[in-house]
Length: 374
Image (cartoon, rainbow, N blue to C red; front, side, top):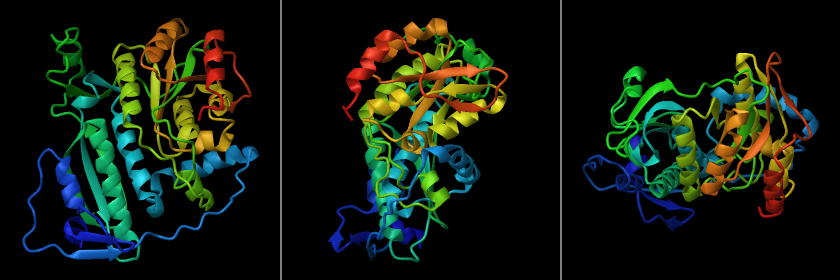
């Protein structure tokens, strides 16, 4: 059954598809798999009908939404009607998950392993698989990243990605002493240690800044999100993760900040969105006072629930107040939009949403120019 999904020709909604999933994967895989014996079959399927509703997401229910998302986050199922955007977002999350680690690498040094589980028992499953593979291949090709290998087995539809380099070190001390650390050739032999350079919880310093950096220019939408699944809603539109060029610009500058030790703490914004990421950072005992007002303003007055729970690939970092000007200059140099959203609260582990925080005057002027330019 898995081989049928992989190697078959597809007719979706009556339209023949130009490539099989295996052919698409072969174009972006470092070591292409062998073709099966015999002629491939033809799979005819149609996309799932999606009946969007107008679920009344309420700002007052944000605390309850946060709890519901946390309970579901690790057991959520793949949203079949949005398998393409979901798969692209999972690629982005996998690449961001390694940005926090020790090592000498850049985005172009990374490879991905992909693991699909799927079946074709029901209408729409084969079409969703095709869209998942297509979105994955298009996005990683635009990012300049290669698939090291992939697998497809029979099971409940899901897809997972893991990023790495050809050589991964386990000895962090050896990395720190490496001869090439401060030379222009430090990625000639890229290395990645699975030990974090930046902690995953807030550090107890009230004067530090918490910075939010979205890695895509797409709108904040809830279709296919963990929140939508948690409350049984069916929004019409997902977060359309597709701006690979912008992702690469963001990744370059963030990786340098992490490697240079400027980032004091940081996490990937993935399943569950920004609110879930903030709660994870607060799990060490230091919480945060946070305002999303400027994010909402910069996106035409976007709803707070969408900003907090849409799963746009992003990061949240903590930096020292003394490093703020340096980080500001580095991000602006790469045309990366960022938002200072608050400060840690030592001794208070909760994440508190406030209406507004004081931000530097120059940055506030910049943010005001972005309002309405979504």
